[in-house]
Image (cartoon, rainbow, N blue to C red; front, top):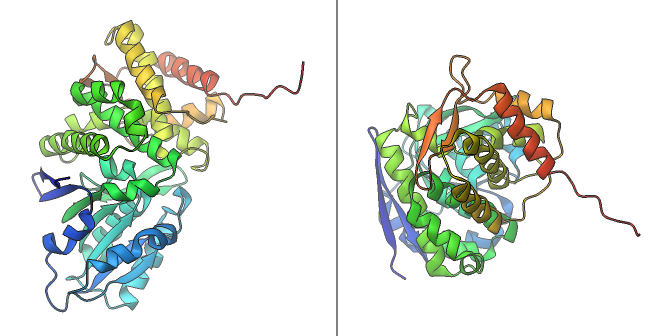
Length: 371
């Protein structure tokens, strides 16, 4: 399989995303590693045990990197961990010429990028995403950040990587649930910008879920191209980039309301997308047939876990979403398949109806104990 290079060009940064098999071998070829440059790898213990040896093999002609660890789980994506890791960088002699490699899923990538952005007011970093969700979404575009109790990614900065290496081989060890969580983000990319990607995912769910390398390469590359195009037009989310948040208003609210422990990010976004369809359909931005196709394709990559929270708590979390501006609730709705619009007039009643629909649909099922 040929390695695919996808350029990302924004007002402040130009870099490439490399997609394919054995992409690890390309890392030192595309990142400058002059003599004396200190290299650091931020990863999780689980990822390092699976793929650390392969990553280290790419540095056989360069100085071996210093490895820093972040525990797995959304609850560790916090300022306390960023401060701890910054202290470890300082203790290990990291300076402004150092390179940080974020080697893991979206949490490692987001926190690693944030750490690189704030350490000595900014050092270079590269993304080596090891989950599908991180490969198709969070590793590209320069958004970095950590969570607060009040909400997700409320502290962060824009800091683009020097390069991104999306190795399809690592997905073969990805847990099934993690794979499906990433596929929801690719469905999102199809709905908002790429009807060809959507149709491919609509018609090839079995092949994709079987982890066919060619199918994975196709959806990863297409998803990254969607994001690269949007970010190239609107780097700082002042307009068009908002469409990438389809499903995220209620998705982030579900994550916050459930304490970031019960759902993976992609699973919460899937529920958020389904809720957005409930708002879009009565407004006439999509037809009944289009809504059915979108819902069926989202659910084809399920199952989705139950959501245990209250209407009031979910509405409160949605009200604190960082996409809101000047008291106005900003919401992304599909306009057919392959197009989306940002609206600011979603009413309390519309949002409440969508939340109630989600909670009714996502209610934990009680197992029967007998006749």
